[in-house]
Image (spheres, rainbow, N blue to C red):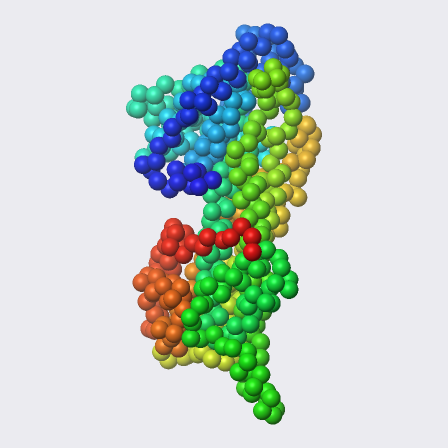
Length: 509
């Protein structure tokens, strides 16, 4: 999974194919070639889907593959980002290298060449239903490999034929089964999902760091994160979230001991002018983010299996000298993992938005000026504008939270009668990822403003102080009103790309 992200993020990274993998590819390809005249094999010498009963003559086997690719390259909408296309191509390459698809060594080398030369097919965002795999989007990748359609190269959208001619690259000539093997599988949803899991882990790290800083900003009581409490409800994610928070607030001068409050109450005081317990968005951080961690862990496991699986059909079983007709192309595992992780990130986003509201709402926090104003309340508006962005972005994420996989509609003459919608689930998940960075970024701006108002930088834990300084290096204190859009975008970009605040979560607690 990390290898996919490394290739996507580092343009100098080059792929190499293992000689052992090529041996598997050659054996699989030879088996298909030798069996063409001996067996009825779906998609090789038959039609596709509901037309599988139509036999295809030997002289039309190659034409069949071209027809499949061209007919299915019918997507619509904005082009997918290059990183999504690259991830899908890498996952498809990895699947083909398992040696169960019957493709030629030449096709493998062509895929590697496209990737290493950073030639990325233009792939529209809409069209796949995620059941016979991501047929439509993967067909656009296959279309580029045969020299048709469009590609993105060196930052420009161009005709594939023009780019290949300029680079001296010949289009790939499809052989029997190769069109089907290129488009039949879960590579798009899995590639995007692999990138998404890594972002989800980063967002959770940032959310816990923001949570720690929030606990310090309100001088929270420490017992809400104590191990004794969480051992009594020992969900793995909850315990780990609490452990991380304890590490993050270590040596903070802000957190309070519950014993002090107990002594005051025993002294006969009738009313305590203090919070006995913090709001849930502070006190229940482990209980809210713990399930998110568990969901991300599960999704990582699912995606790790999926990107290393054979999702073709039919599968070429060389060892047992047979073709296996099945449904490994169905995207339900990936769609389910992404839907569940998406819901978790929406809850993470909501948690962040609620704390931002708390800090900006003077009538409920009773400790900070309205909208964290550091000048003249009323005349200056401070973070009021940012809160609208946080609110609207969170609402949009809540709209996306509904599981997309339940929106199955039978298609393909009802041959595909229950579909996963996995590719769209992946795209919706990534929208929630992008929006979570926005809302967390706004919370971090708010938190840093509270530290400035409290003049508390030196009282913070070492971890929180490092986070505070990183944010303040990008967005200085908001004293006089100024437009914050560009600064916020810079902060979001920093959060998306830095490894500095990533947390290594333990597998179990």
